[in-house]
Length: 241
Image (cartoon, rainbow, N blue to C red; front, side, top):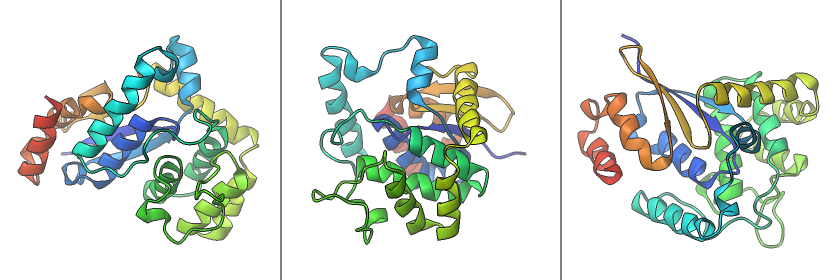
């Protein structure tokens, strides 16, 4: 019987995408799930759906940051207070870098790159970034729009030649077209925002779920509460109900 699977769409601009990604990478609940990370552009997805970013909606812009912090505190997810300087910022370069990298390496290597990109945006003091001094400004922040900074981050977790090759290819048509195709594919699967989880259970049934606060539905659909650390999966379930 095939293992449960999650396709998770990545754009580091999304704070809820970050905390959802962190859970997939770190929670034992998802340890036996086959995970595929697909770079997309959230702005492009919103445009296709006619959706509006939460920070552009009056009152929701203030509430959404508090809500994010509540979930992060509940699960001890490391995240900065407030939003990054200049937020929202362009993630075209980081999206293209991850897209190019997806053509060169396996999913685990891709996830290592996503780890540092996410952290640079949402938790610059994260453990995964310790020791990386190059690319930081006087405030200890990373400019995730800057290709040189992205190459520095990639070189910290991957072979330097691969990092150089990837960043040298972000302007190529193949890479740009694939990122657009990934975004279109997410839309066609039903996504309208991030985080979006495209889940397939052991029975071969597939369903999409949106939002960090719907991880309980993901756990139930994939029948993860029946496996592994039942205490941890139960904790996820109770918190999401």
